[in-house]
Image 1 (spheres, one colour):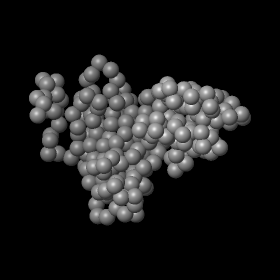
Image 2 (cartoon, one colour):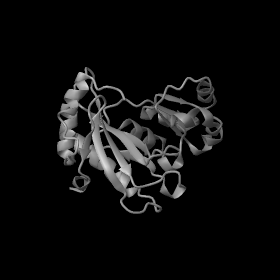
Image 3 (cartoon, rainbow, N blue to C red):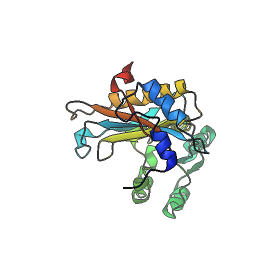
Length: 231
């Protein structure tokens, strides 16, 4: 087991390990513990009572955070003609069709979110082995396969985050930067939690939200009182 550094010991000492803090207090603690030389991301992690190995228990979706993420998101769009022009006007970073597919095949992926119009999916589908493992494959259920290119690009640029349950039933996401005001982080956290709660799958039995924690990129985890999430 790796030894804690002096810095990590000092941070851990500020958090009571057996205590679950109200959401506002937990986020305030996470902000206070963000002492790195860069603007750390504040992250939320939720342990759900699901088994994602079963199709009827998968939790996946998109949620727009009201105060954004503080992160610059590069958006790539597969489109032709007027829709390609619409994507460019909306602020997409990379737009193309066969030319963009060729770049992706070469490993030149200069975007963090991928959007495609429905007519482009035959082309994009051939890139599944490259885009899939990176979590970049467009998906109609996530709103990234759409004719509303303008809206999709604006959402991606404006603070939309994707969530997907891992094998252990955990979903997590960045909900802003340590430089954000605490109230804005709380608003973002509540928006994320609400999206997770609305995504409760039909196959989930018993307690759905088991544990919740927040932390900064380099900081100690702070347990959140689950009952405070709906307060």
